[in-house]
Image (cartoon, rainbow, N blue to C red; front, side, top):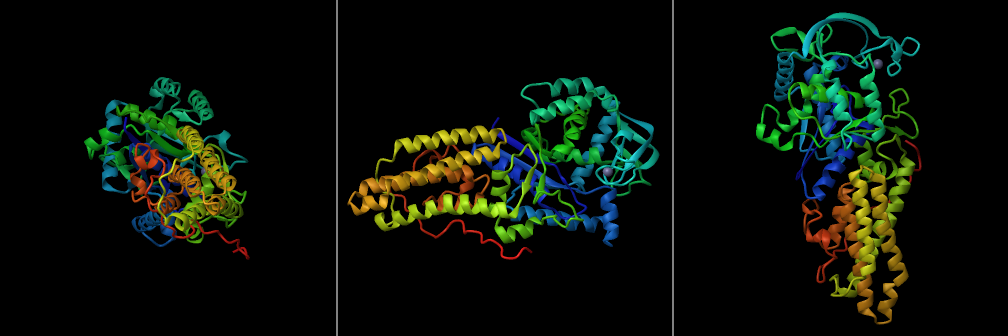
Length: 512
Ligand SMILES: [Zn+2]
C-alpha cells in the first residue's frame, strides 16, 4: 500500500475563500506532504462545488452568468491555495464535463440497481442549507444556521433508497480501525443512522426550483441535486469512468478531510451511494473542528472574514500554516488570532529555530570556512532527536499536528540548550577546535531533522534551512528513506550563510 489518496471537501463557489476554507486545505496539504515524507506516492484532490441555487442567485446579483461567476470564484480559490503553498495534484470543478458525465452515470447506475425511485415530497426547505429541515431542527420557526424561515415545498423528486443500506452501513461504521474519526463522531453517526427520521433522501429537484445543475439523464425536468453532484467529485478526481487505470490505483480514498458539520453526509450518504454503485467505500473520514477569528465566529456582518491572500501578503504562508496547526487541535474547534500568531511565530520560528541556525552557520563559517569538520557528533543528542522524531510520527499519523510540532520543538529547544551549555565559541578560544566543531555539527544535525519534520507544515522555511545547511537535494524529494533524513550532517558539507531564515514579524502599531 504505497499510495495515499487524500481529499478535502469541495468549497461552495458562491463567494471568495476565507481562512476557514484555508484551514481544511492546509491540513490536507500537510497530510499529503507528510505521506510523501513517509515515501508514499500521494494524490491530493481539492476543488470547488459549483452548482446550486445559491450560486445561481449570487451570480444574478453580481450581474454575471453562473458560468462567469464560478469561473471567477474558482480562480480565487486556486490563487489563494497557491499563495498558501497548498499543492493539490488536481483541482476539480463540478462543472467540468468529465464530472457531469460521472454524476449522470452514477444516477443511472443507482436507478438500474433499483435504489432510486420517484416520490412526492413535502417538506420545509431552507435555501441556505440547500436541504429539507425537520420541525425539530427549527429554532423559533427559523433555520438556526441561516436565521430564515424555511419554505414549505411540495414536489415530485427522485429519492435514494438509503433504507436498503442501513445494515451494511452499521457494519462498516463498527469496523476497526474506525472509518470515522475523531472516534466520538463515529458514535454520533451511528446514532444518526438509528434515527427513524433518517430515511430515503431526495437526490433531484424540479427544474423550476433549480436550473443551475446537472440534468437527470433523459429527463431534463429533473436536476440532480447537491449530494450526488458534490460527493462524487472524489471518484471523478481519481479517474472513475474516465481513466480506469488511475482509478484502480488511487481508489479507495485513504482519507476524506471534512468539516465536522458534514460528517453525516460523508459517513452515511456517501458510503451508501458507493455501495449502491458497487464501488469500495473510503478508508477514513475525518471531521475537523472549526476556526473562529479573534474568538468570534466569522461572519460578513461582523466584518471579520479573513482573506487568505491578504494574510499571506502580510505574514507569509509559513506563519499562517504554522500558527493554525501549532496552536490548534485539529479535531476540536480552534481560533485564529493575529497577535497570537505573531507571538508564536516570532518566538518559535524566528527566535527558537531561526537564531539557532544563524548562530550555528555563522560559527561554522568563521571557524571552519563553512565546511562541516570531520568530528564525532554527540550520540546522546542524536538519539534524543530520534526519540522526538518517533513521537512526531506517532502524532502525525493521528492528525495530532500540534503535538507533532511540540515534539519537533523539543529537538530545537534541546539543540539551543546544548549550544548554550557547551559554548563552542569558548571552546574555540581555548583552542579546542575539534570539540567546538563537534558541538556545532551536532546542533546542525538536530536542526536538519527538525526542519525535515516541520516541512509538511512550513515548507518554505524548511527549504531555506536545508539549503543553508548545505543540502542540494530538493526538499520534496527527501523521504524518511533518504540519507539526508537518516544520517547526521556529513563531514565536508559546505553550509551557506544567507542571513535569517525567518524574519521577525513586527507588531502592528495601528489595527487596520
Ligand atoms: Zn439553513
